Length: 129
Image 1 (cartoon, rainbow, N blue to C red):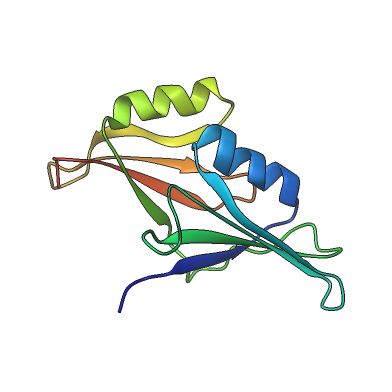
Image 2 (spheres, rainbow, N blue to C red):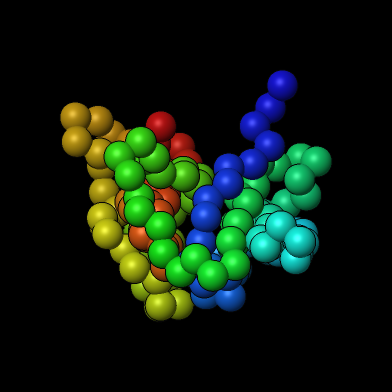
């Protein structure tokens, strides 16, 4: 078994695609409209779904916003340099909610960014786990 994807609901599909591709550097892997079901799925990631876990962006027609709730935490991404990744993300218009640095009570270097719908994305620096 392996993790295939994580699905998140988004209020503005174009804005979300722009964030995940232009700000985080992912690629659109699949884009499927389901007009009878009134939703669209777009899968984004860093490599083919056959080899990588990806994120499924689901847009339900006419829904512009979702409540975050208290159950969902974040999606985590491995990065070479969390400090540089934060700088690059800010330069591309992304929002950094926790600057890079060692986590409390540990040495792992982490940072957090937020997507346009408010979902948190943790950046974990390789080699510091």
